[in-house]
Length: 149
Image 1 (spheres, rainbow, N blue to C red):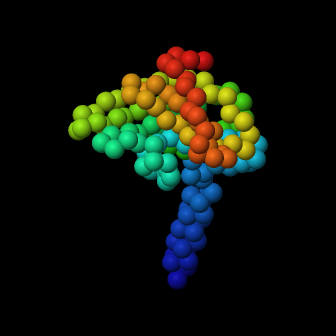
Image 2: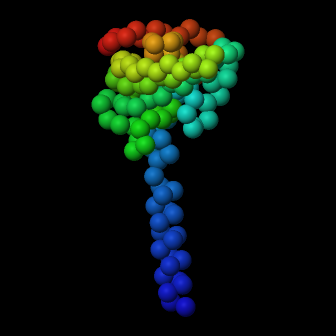
Image 3: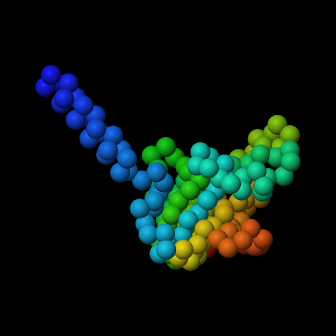
């Protein structure tokens, strides 16, 4: 009986420890004093992925590093929360047009404001674009060309 109780307590402790881990980089930051950046595609729900992708083209824009630090153990994500200010993002892009795959990588600097949500997108050849989508979805994308800092 004691062995079963010990195993149950161990399982509960392990699961509660997992529950305390953040689901994405910066999740534990205060949303009012930080900014959220969403890529396109990946595993975290992205409500604009279907709207922003033209018919016949699939794309995925993922974040690998923020300020030189990997965003997660597995490599990339499409959702991070960062402190307000300037950050260096390393992204990867995958485009599939008419069955042909195209891949790219880019690093660029973005300046984010607290309490805002940004949509990260890219044009072919991984030319990054970012848009503040906090208040509306009618805003213009800000181009962050290759090597821009």
